Image (cartoon, rainbow, N blue to C red; front, side, top):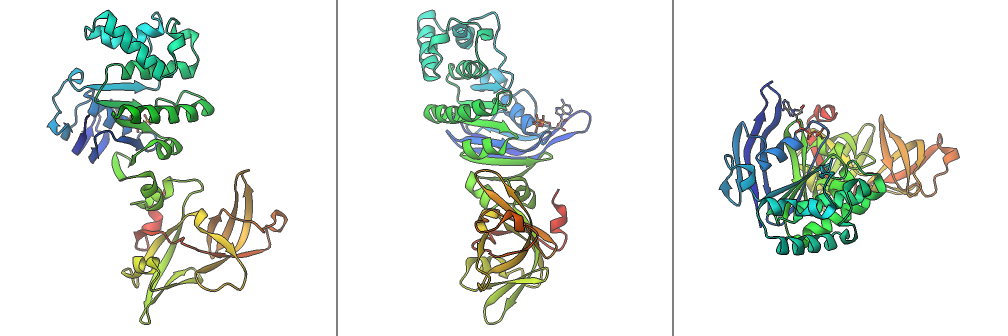
Length: 371
Ligand code: ATP
């Protein structure tokens, strides 16, 4: 229904704050794009510029391929949902949802029909006669969604719409919202600082830091193959292990990664070897997710690192072992066989499995840029 393109978009506020720094981003037709990043990184400013509530300082915003920089908000076929819901307290639920239709002059009969359809899609058909203060938080948010949907916008803009709700309801509504938006096939830009929300709801995630776009991709891509060290460190819990290593390519075609006083041997037919081979002689940062590390028997050969268990952490559904490998703690999430009472004992050898997922940086200083 609507595509969005940001071309070299920058926003500098009057006080000199660079809120958005040369951002390029495309949102495809019907796509659910999540803007993710810490507080103050510029997510809301991007959203407000797309809505027409804020002018870019430079760059272009295109809606359906047309330059929209000077298009007034009311001409953009956009519906916004904010975290504070902003329902009219004196109006019933039905009137709240109908409000945008009344404004645009839709006759009462079709208006009533559209409101009933939307309310039933959202499961709030039985509370149409109530006032907002007679609703639960989740119901209020559904009404806000209903009011946004009813005009059949081309684009939804949602700014932390679930952040005022408790965690159980948030999880429930995030499935509902993404289901509903997909059913309606309306392109959506959804702002959040909650990575679980981003990774579960998005078709693609755009990660920002200090106004700069760091990475854009499907949840699997940004999680498994982060484009920058920042994204590698930011996404996922526990944090991705980032270890400095030097690369050495041997003439008889295998690669060693030297991590502190240990070395990993990667045969040439291993794609991880080829991924790092062109950094021969350099120091790089290697990213390894905890779930890619598994304990192996002490005499195992190959891509194995040895570590001493510093401490164990039990989370109910998983347990984590923090290992000292040289000077570095590595988090491993499968510690079957490890005994908490033996936390100070030498730990089992850890096989790296497919752990060397990707180079996330290069040069001796790369690791130091991680916040
Ligand atoms: P949050 O999650 O806290 O809402 P955000 O990622 O949405 O953060 P923005 O609200 O876009 O971030 O703000 C980006 C930066 O721009 C911040 O440093 C903020 O203080 C600044 N900023 C936002 N609005 C203005 C303004 N009107 N004048 C000056 N600076 C502003």
